[in-house]
Length: 172
Image 1 (cartoon, rainbow, N blue to C red):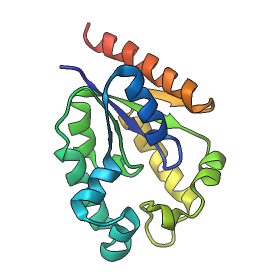
Image 2 (tube, one colour; image 1 turned 90 degrees about the horizontal axis):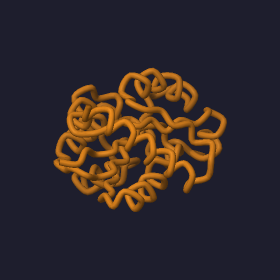
Image 3 (cartoon, rainbow, N blue to C red; image 1 turned 180 degrees about the vertical axis):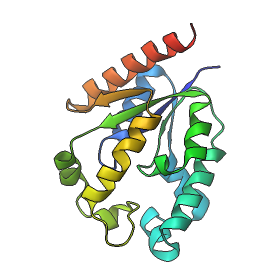
């Protein structure tokens, strides 16, 4: 059974974009867990947050992630996936978790309006607060870290190289 390649990181780091390219390079399926969540909930991410709140969103995201039953796929998780220990453990049962890391300044440029983007943020918190809160969680769950300072194609190649290397080491 082929392991999954699981991408974690902040919104704007390139999980979906890099994930699609990596899936093509590996011949894997591509799954965007944000789209799975939206389909299960029948709403956009920002609507789930505004209509039901952050806690409901986190629970719904955990359900969506835990519902994934696949092998040989690249899975781009939502940036807040790391709030769920249960979901992360489930994903890592058959996968290599790669943290796509970018400096805060670059994330801030790419994200723009965090509320419109559907980023999980408690009331009164800033994007910087969320970044600082999540960094240790990404570090905890990552098997591999990739600093995404290159173009998309090169970042995807690095992700695939590190995934294949990590996968080989796991099977020893």
